[in-house]
Length: 164
Image: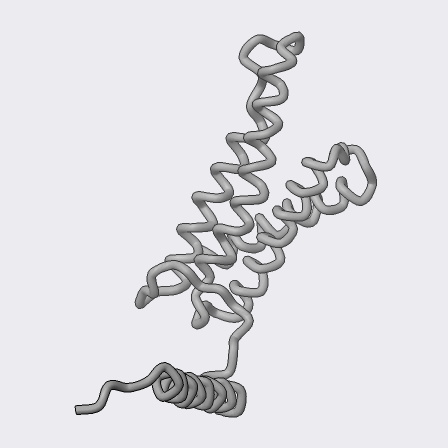
């Protein structure tokens, strides 16, 4: 039996590397050229699909609405002189707004009735806009922020009606 030399082992390794590289190139080309199995919907639904998507999103809406209501109306525990408490209350309000919007978008099932889905998307995006701008220091008295707050109130009323 002959012992392989260093040059023959190097040749075998080179051939194996070439085969692996060609397989990788083939797989990459296939992945680029194949048709997607489903067209992307643009939605990121991360909840559990239910038989009643309307009831599911209406329940999520109620949770978010209550969280926003509670956290945007809290008062600092030490009164108006409690700077740390005021900052904590403001932070909780911003979290309720921004995360509430994200939560609604993540729980919006693809087969939710279109009118309700559109209203939820609008409301959720508006909540995130309000929260993000509040975080950057824009007060509720700013005309554009005041308009966003008004739109959120209007969307809240519309969704409440649609969820009946």
